[in-house]
Image (cartoon, rainbow, N blue to C red; front, side, top):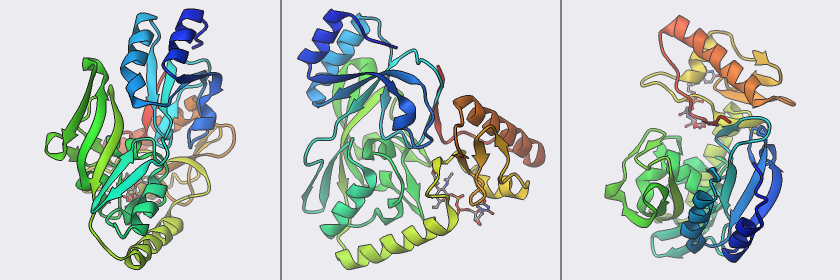
Length: 302
Ligand code: EPU
């Protein structure tokens, strides 16, 4: 979708929103899949209420992009513009055991920055691509930890209610790859309360998680991490592997040879290739195990 109304363009400039026209979202997703639209980069949180107001008034539909690492976006010209926060400098500040982190901050850099300040707990998340806001929204986790356990409070914009809000941890529920945030809530910043630990010890934990990840996941390839959630008490990757589906492909969308719950873009895969592969694998798992796998990856259909 293209914004070409001069009045709207002026309103966006007044709000200090940077408009990039005709951006291929394939350049902004870890799967390297996604069609084209205008990308609106938000430099200040305070612009958000005004921005959503002018977009709503102009009848411009929108989606909110984090780091694009757990996302499958439709192909072609997309029927909505995409909003993205620009990380401020600095994007993490530390005060005692509290880390105040902008939602646009890179997750991996945040984990190492906190580690250097002797704050641990998040070692398992090293190597998970994406932003802190994205990790928060879906309660990213690995190796027995999840980000939600460390949340003290979250600043967000509740688009449905046109309201900036700060929620305490006891007002949010964090479950396995799921949170109580509304679909339209925009994560803006989070305060994490992290356990103190000497940097050297945290680094040791980071190295162990890195090694585990390197040995079991296709890190150098274009993927969205695990494509399906693990059903209670079972492993999606193990089931897909047991069915002999590693290497199965639709176009250039392929089940990884290394980890069967990672679907990779081995070349020029389209969103439809990926969706067809996901559908085919789901059916095989359903037929063999009577389990309906749920997407972990967020799908933006056009
Ligand atoms: N397995 C296989 N074949 C495979 C993949 C896995 O047999 O192709 C087996 C493994 O040998 C192991 C079991 O399945 O016995 C579980 O595998 P793994 O330890 O790799 O963990 P997972 O359940 O597949 C989960 C998370 C990952 C996270 C790892 C490590 C989900 C959907 N996946 O994977 O998170 O990195 O544990 O904690 O919860 C993600 O969310 O995107 C993600 C990659």
